[in-house]
Every structure is written in structure tokens, then in C-alpha cells.
Amino acid sequence: MSEARPRIVIAGTGSGVGKTTITLGLMAAFKKRGLQVQGFKAGPDYIDPSYHTAVTGRPSRNLDTWMMEPEGMREIFFRGSRGADISIIEGVMGLYDGKDPRSDRGSTAEIAMMLQSPVILIVNVHSMARSAAAVVKGYQLLNPAVPIAGVIVNRAGSEGHFRLVQAAIEQECGIPVVGWLSRDPSIDIPERHLGLIPAIERGEIAPLFARLAELVEKGIDLDRLESLASAAPQLETPEKRIFAPASSGEEEPVTIAVAKDAAFNFYYPENLELLTHHGACLRFFSPLRGEIVPEEVDGLYIGGGFPEEFVRELSGNGKVKDSFRRKIAAGLPTFAECGGYMYLTEAIIDWEGNAHPMVGVIPAAVRMKDRLAALGYREVEALSDNLLLKRGEKARGHEFHYSELTAQSDHYPPAYQTSGRRGKHREGYVRENLLAGYTHLHFASHPEMVPRFISACQQYRLSRRADT
Image (cartoon, rainbow, N blue to C red; front, side, top):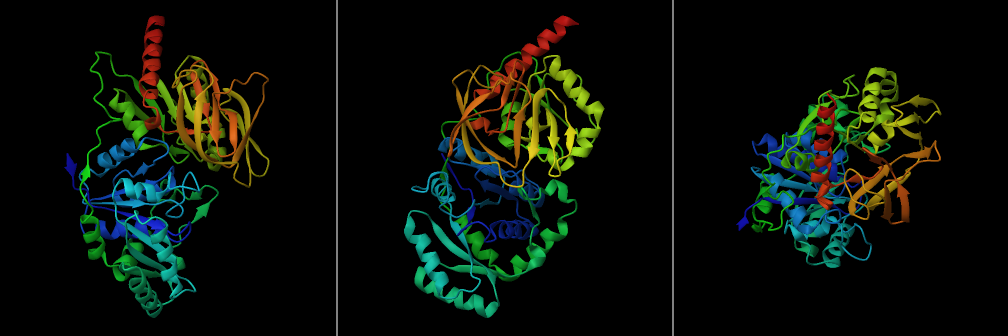
């Protein structure tokens, strides 16, 4: 069965050309028109989707052709775009940048081809006129199968400059230039060591969205873009499903506590939805606001985020840290990723060299660095049976952090052997009911992880009840 899903991909000639700014402006402008707008982000990114979610009011989702099978990526698109009038997919890096410099694997281009989605190419035309046509022509010729349907010109010096560029591109490339934005520092989005500051920390950002919508309405032909999105061909619904019908067992649903606040907010929506799909009830709580691990829960999930930005608050709340220690020591199945991993160590050492005591259930210390410590896709192989994987099983995800971890004990059993661009390494920590590591795993890469986690939660609940 095929379905119509109006959609466009916002791609760039490279990083920093204005993809996020223009994407947010388009989302805000279309929403202002009364449309239901669904956001997507190509590749493993948590921060840009937080902005999408803030402006559209719908959870933004990641589309990735390396961390999951193509059918899984398509299923995520179908699920996420349900009920939307238009889907806007923000690309990653340059249009053709991905896992392999010799192919389109893992790139925005591959996603556009798999979804048969029109591509709108963002070109920074600062100090360019006719040369902009050569840039666009090169992107067209590298892979003619990529459906580049239009161009948006960014950082033009004036409307006259835009008209010069428009004339050159439309004559030489045969596709429309649907609009432009000028150089405007008032719409620059602040950054820090992990990229764009998460919207969850920005407070009131409605004025930014309103300003972006105003600029987009003034300079970009929204009717033309909506027409291009609606002209996208119907898509065949995927046959193989990540969200396959779950077995209707008579087990009482388990409850999994999920840490979620400004310090811990990096979760793929599908990770949480797969847990609920398989019968788990999620209970969100905020360690940063002083909320302890809920008493009557059967499992614990601590995602990534920015604990290093809140080390004083996290370190100073002994009651919260004690609840983590007590629950994990009592056997609560616990999965922690990146920021959650850091929080469970003995200390985070900030950029000034100050040590801030953390939970202390993992015998290690984390030191913040001025430069990126790890970045890229990872395939993990379990070195022993753990909460999610049997020994030898593999899953996929990514690493992205500015910290380094040093074990404080000779006995430090690693969770995984990871494979990435720089070879193989041992990573993470595993001990009985605890699994933690820097790698952000996407459950869709190995869906069996979900029922295995839930089974561990069920066993814990039974053992706890037997002890009472």
C-alpha cells in the first residue's frame, strides 16, 4: 500500500551554511499558516531535533541509514509523519557527507533517495554570483539520482545580489531558486562545545521563531515549497516493522524510571516508544530538580545530555545521588548512556580542574576536555551478557563527547568492543544489573534489546516481591 506524505529535505553544501536556521524558519512559517509540521533530522543528532520539537509542538525524529535498516528508517518516517500536513527533513553536514567518502552511505542524499523526497539545497552565496551556479551544478552531477528540486540562497548581500545568483542558477541548472535570506546576526543561534544549545535550556525562544518566520515569509516562496512537497511521489509502506505487533502476554507491565531534564535529555523517541510498545510504563523524573529515583520502579534509564554544565547542582544534591546508589545496589536494572554514564562515576572534573563528586557506583572519574574526545558512528559488540545484549551480539549507535574517563580500579569490566573509523576499542562498564557506556545506542539497530531489558525488569520485580 502506498500513501501520500508531503515532504522536503533541507540540505546544505556543507556544515554552517544555515540549514538549521532556514529549517526552523520554514517550520515556524508553515505552522503560522495553520499547518501541522513534522520535523526530522538526518543522522545521529539530539540538539537540532530539540529545536524542531519546540517550534512544531511535535516530537522531531532522527532518520539514519547506517544505525538501522532502510525499512526501519522508512518506518520511522511513516510513524512520525502521520497526521502531518508537511514533513521537513533537516540534513546533516553537506548533502553527500556520510559514513563513507566514496559513497552516499549514511548521507542526507541517501535518505532523500530512499524517501523519494525533493531536496532544497541551501547555498551560502557570500562573495559569489555566477559561481553559485557552478556549485549547484556540481551537486546535481555528482549523483543525478538525488532529486534536487530547488535552491535557497543564504547570506546574500542584498536583493540585487540574490537576483544575480538566481538568474545564474536557474539558467545553468534548470531548477528554481525559491528564495533567499540576507546576512543577519540577530538570527544566529548560540553554540557551545556540543553544538547548538538545547532548546530545553533556552527558556523562552518564541521571539527567535517569530523572527525567523518573518524573514522566511518575506524572502522565500512558501507556496512553491508547499507545492514541491506535495508533488513528492506516494511512498510504499514498509513491510518489515520495528514496531511489529507485540505478543499479548499476561505479564503485569513493568515501570521504568527515565531521567529527563536539562542535564539528561538525549533520547531517541523510538527508544522510549519501543519500551512502551513492548509493555513498559515510563515514569519521568528530574535529578536536576532534586527528584529521587522513584521507589516503585522496575528499571532505570539515564540518557545523555549535559551533566557537566550542571555539576554543582548534581553534585550538591546528596539525597538524589543516594537514591541512585541505593537502588542500583539493590539490583535495579540500570542502563546509562554518555551523560548518564558520567553521572554514575565517582566524579566529574570540570575545565578548571575542580572535582565534583557524583553517584559513585562506577569506579572511574571523568575529566572535561577543551577538544572533542570522540565523534562518530559506533558498532558495539557485547563482551559478556548484559541487560541489552548477549555476548557477541551487536548493535549500532554513536559517540559524541568532550570528556575522557579514567578507571579508578584494576577491576573495570568493559561492556563493549566498539568499532569506528579509528579502529576497535573497549568501552563502557558492565556489572550484574548495571550497563553503562559513552555510546548512544539506537534500539532500532537491534530491537531484541528492548524485550531483554524488560525481561530483566520483570525478574527484578519478582525478586523484590519475594523478599517482602
